[in-house]
Length: 138
Image (cartoon, rainbow, N blue to C red; front, top):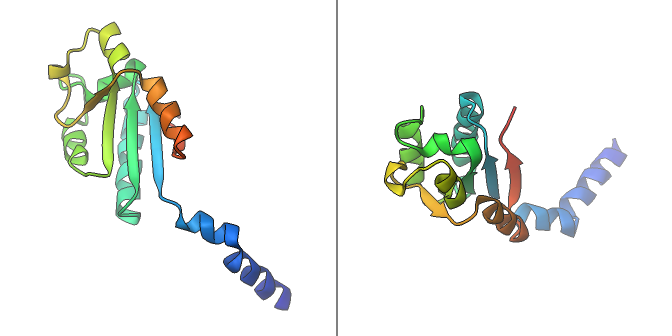
């Protein structure tokens, strides 16, 4: 029993442990899937994180067929996207290259969705800045 208390004490007061707890909660989601199950999962994760960690920063980068999530006439979750995009800690970023390849104009995007020149570069830039990375797929 004393060993367990000692181990817990060491973990709690270890500077690395304390530093890890003090870091910001920042995560970038990589969505390339057209599958609505994958798309719903991302929305669910954002809602769950927002509810548990109010200051968490989240970004969803959409390219490839994942772009469908933020195109007005293709999205099954347009209302959710529009509401989440109003949260200052949540952003949806559509890849301009994917938009060009799929002939999607910025007027076709759900309000609040931003455009980045290159979705992959956006993701690696976030990772370089210390953001966590999640590939949204089953």
